[in-house]
Length: 156
Image (cartoon, rainbow, N blue to C red; front, side, top):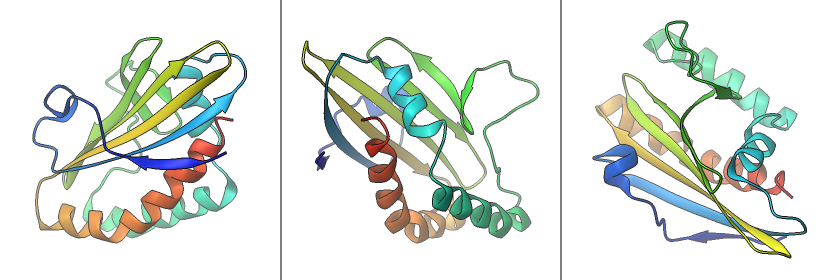
């Protein structure tokens, strides 16, 4: 299972106008075709324990700054996968994410299926709002890349 970093190929203006950061990773999995929701559920529904620890640590560290620890919103009935609300969904694409004080982000899961394999691409878009958002992004970026690669492996 090879995970490749690729050039992001999503419509930034549609999913997060003004996004100044984007990256994308792709994995090809053999076997029956899957849809984008299944891929997203495998990726984000049950993270490995070490990622749960990182998320809990992140939540403790950002709480004093008033940042969200989840996209859950009691005023919204949006379905969620893990801590991420679903923004848009088709068989081939699922868009998740939420907006916060420091930055807005989207995770776009694209699936291109053939009879013997599926390509799953995870694209992340980020728009920072202030110095806190830019600092936050700089700090989490090395972890982000490792986490996305790990999560993509769970699709297989």
